Image 1 (spheres, one colour):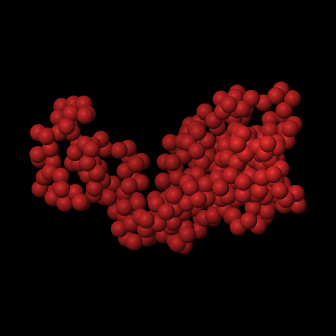
Image 2 (cartoon, rainbow over the protein chains, first blue to last red; image 1 turned 30 degrees about the vertical axis):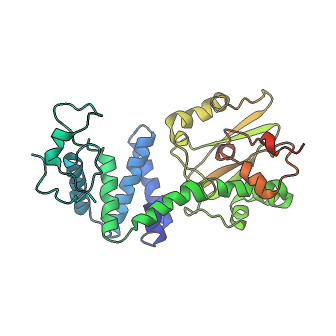
Image 3 (tube, helix red, strand yellow; image 1 turned 90 degrees about the horizontal axis):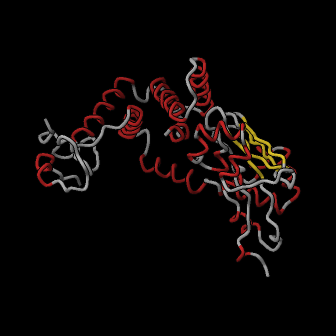
Amino acid sequence: MAVTLADRGYFSWTEWSAALGDELRTATGRGEPDDGSHYYRHWLAVLERLVAAKGLADPQALRLRKEAWAEAYRRTPHGKPVELHPSGAEESRPR
Amino acid sequence: MNDHQPAHHHAEHHGAHDHHGGHEHQAVPSDLALRVKALESLLVDKGLVDPAGLDALVDMYEHKIGPRNGARVVARAWVDSAYKKRLLTDGTAAIAELGYGGTQGEHMRVVENTPAVHNLIVCTLCSCYPWSVLGLPPVWYKSAAYRSRAVIDPRGVLREFGLELADNVEVRVWDSTAELRYLVLPERPAHSEHLSEDELAALVTRDAMVGVATVTIPPAAVQS
């Protein structure tokens, strides 16, 4: 995702690396254990901040969209593909 | 097409899964996974990211760029001593000669395995990896176990990969950074003189270029 956005010129790789480097250094400064899960959390935080800074997607919209996905998982029966707006989902939403 | 009807689902649910207390709905993924889904779907909806393009990109890094670029670099170095010299002197420029460059603008240093020296690459800090020549890093490369143990006990790690080094072989471990990435130039396998550059490239594996394996020649390819 980050590579696509960079390729399309929404931000440069230099901006990306600098932002990621800052995030990782800050995290190390907080004394966080350095493992893979943390790496991706930082990576995502940087991407979220960059798309917000570039006006591509604002934090509020991201939060709402995240809630919508959580809701989609909760209402989708096991074994079915989880979709954000499945047809007929509104009236059959479980209570 | 999604025509499922959750209201009827309880009664006809097949018994393959063991559910508790009637919760037949999907487990909500982690906060991290939800944020990724939110970001991706929002950018796709806005037309900023093409989902097919994303898949193509992942596919490109996994299968096309993958380790094949690195394998071409290695094979060229094996057949062209002048190229090899340039490669070891200025890895970034020599790799760019073959048309491979890093999107992240990182510098490449190529380290050569010899009968006396075995090189191993790691990123102890995170997961810096020579993307432009090796594609996406394997999961084990990003694991805390590999990142810490590759430095403390490289021979032990190599043994777990099935590579037993003689005691008189020196092991050098290279710690990658965002600015400087390493690529191992493996030893050309013995009895490979008759193979073409393309045939040689086909023998070079990702693991060999990370330094957790050596390049071997399949018995069928050995000229009798």
